[in-house]
Image (cartoon, rainbow, N blue to C red; front, side, top):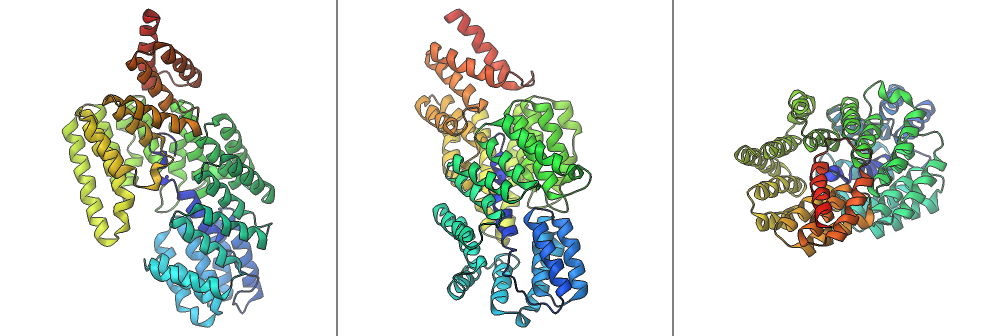
Length: 497
């Protein structure tokens, strides 16, 4: 993960899946003895590019029945099962592809090895070196530029990634998914006009497909254009209304984004409803973490404790896997802090730390990904203990070392609030204004400015910002916790002015 309440937990999710789906594109010739299997392979490729992995799996399984040594079909099944959350089957497919790599072209063998070593074998250095080999041997190949771009993304060189993706456009300007990836790349650089232009081009190149509207909606949410986002997201649902009828990745993603748009408008009941649908639709072992986390955080934001206590489905999902258990500890920790039970929150933080330590022993990259989540809870605990400078230190040294913080309104809001409570008003305002320069409709940061100006005694500015907050939350649920605080300030301003 962006947006409110840890929406940035999976900030790179859509980009990474787009890179995976795009990586399925191969040159017109792959090694198979069956022309019929090849046609099925191409049909599956199109399904994956449009985020319909279940349909792709159906085509690929038929292809393998016709040619059980079709290595690239097994590789594409590796991606398809992965997108669909079926990880055991995904791992089996990459191993089958690997067993067949000696019977395919050198280019195909390189692609198989790149993916095997970056995934199942967790040997990223070897994968990177193979990408360089692919690029040197096949400098005009579609795949070489895609893999070089994905490598640049991982190294956080977004400008270089954009250059490689534009090379893909030069090779095949009608390959629609590349415009999707370019949209997200430009968004990473806060170049949102270019991002939206590319996503609109994606919609033009992929008429009648759902994912372009999901992507447009997600980026519009980042800049606070919630009404437009909802129009695009619901338009996507109209294209394939059956997405709500069975478990599927795209249906889950689009409902998650609708939930985020409603959360951005303060319409918590609608947000919770769509997050719940997203959770039910998510296939296989996979889970959209931000949908589950935001669902519970939205209930905390409105203090709907009965609903929180009775809604155990999402917590059970998080508890089912070691990699998602830390997020269960996060939710429960913040719940305890909302009830002023600091010791129970500390216990949750320690439980989270134990899991992260155990996972890090298996994969060192886990710490960098999950410690910021642990740090968020630790910092909130310090804030509850009124140890604000310590909270600031935790936020700045542990949370904002990861890419996820860049688009996380929640993390920025909590850090800005810690600075405010520590009476570091200028630093708090700087954070708020940076976020608002991207999303002027972020009511968390707008309401924080109201509080800062009020604390400083600048009542005229407080009143101006309060008017903006009231406009932003004109359709918000009445029990959103920020509204009570704003009403108190409004009453005080009536006396002071």
